[in-house]
Image (tube, rainbow, N blue to C red):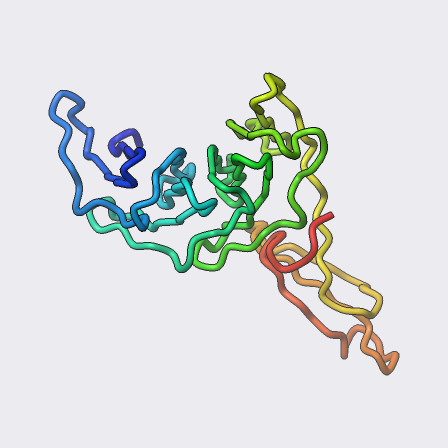
Length: 212
């Protein structure tokens, strides 16, 4: 809502500010703990309730900032495979986080449940490997990811489809919940019975399966 600002730097100090009155900014609570690692990138989720902080050490911290004066860390930081995280970005729907860094590793994360983030398949690879990824950005529809590297190139990635693996048996039916956040799939039972005795799995978007 434009009322909160986050700052971070080489000192590793990350602080939230109330900027409802820009001429009179006010610090909110205590600085966020990052283990004294320098901070290179920060981003709020679209709904403003989650904060991603990336820095040296190659990790990204996720914070619950629904109450900016009382931020709360979501579990362990994400290990991105980079020596240092240089960029972080949320998808427009806030369900996916992209991270880029010093070693050129660009990784997508399912953060629909910020307390239980999961990597979405392998890291994006190609000519960016070994080249610092200084910027990542999603298109407004969330279907394209742009990565900017220290080789002066900007690359566009068509984001991968997601395959959910809930059963080894044939899937005969599937349906989304009305809000689109949950998918239920029914598979034929191993003994060949019909769908009345099917295995049923529920998965929240990409986080429950393999991403291709």
